[in-house]
Amino acid sequence: MKNFTYYMPTRIFFGAGSVQKLSRARLPEGPGLLITGGTSTTRLGYVGKVADALAEGGHETIVYTGVQPNPTIETVRECAALAREKGCSFVVGLGGGSAIDTAKAAACMATNDGDWWDYVYGGSGGRQRLRKAPLPIVAVTTTAGTGTEADPWTVITNGVEKIGAGSDLTFPAIAVVDPDFMMTVPPRMTAFQGFDALFHACEGYISAAANPVTEMYSMQAIELIGRSLARAVQDGSDAEARAEVALANTLAGFVESMSSLTASHAIEHALSGIHPNLPHGAGLILISLAYYKLVSPACAEKCEKMARALGREDGDFVAALAGLQAACGVANLTMSEYGLRPEKFEEYADHAFADMGGLFRADPAHPAREDVLRILNESWR
Image (cartoon, rainbow, N blue to C red):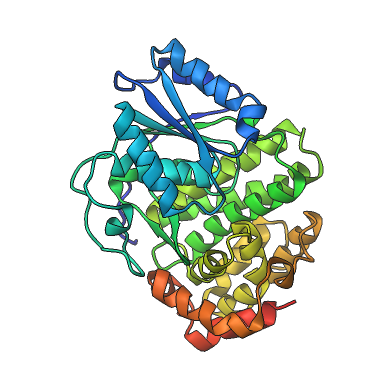
């Protein structure tokens, strides 16, 4: 039996209407900085619902709405400065991974000296340890994709370096997973986010860091996505399908907190770091068939189990992925539509190893640079 350590300190409120539980959440006295992006969370009333619930608990909220997809170090700096200026006692990330990851990093930099990049391991990061605990973090997810509400990781872009970082200190104190907040996500984004969650579960399952607990969570997440993602894409009002995909996403976050992702995520981070218009889930879909064709011989038994969890009884995981992508309407994505170019493949490969090289060590196939180039070339359309 493999030794492992289990640590999951986040209090999770899951289910329809669970945002209201923030009114009774134990948070320090004082205002909270609510970090979100774009206009949809305001237009759909989510900002108001979170602020109202916190107000019932006696907390004022200061709202920041400047987070963009693939959040940047500049946004982290702005939010940290605002939290300090307003004397905030906690930080709320409301939205997808971009908002929540920004909230995690800003909460750290509201209490620590220097810059967030000083504490990033990988690339040009400073590889320092956080000296002080961050402000308490509240994660309210409006997507079912990143699992960041249930793990300590935060992915921030600095220039073209898109790197995940975190520690035990960056777990959210509280997470709200309310499927009611996910009902209006458009079909294409539902698919992108759902495949991100799926690949978190799959990579965590085949990773060298997998253990009996993560394997249990991984298989449950894969089964839920296989059963419900296409339904949620085809009918966004299907409350049961939305809830099952939301649960799969959170379970995959548990996997990320204890296991490790693999080379697939390192490659994709290089792609969307250089091309920030590329949605992370779309990037993973683009390279997925070539990646799993390469890696499956090194973890054949696990790939067969994942295929069956997706409903493919012959155990062909690549075929199972292709079938689910077709059912979700994302089988015909092309690299070219997002501006990726073959003449940059070597640059992408270099960044994959330089920025998140540790994921290659956790990969069961231990892909070399020529393998990354092969994946990219086979994925090109």
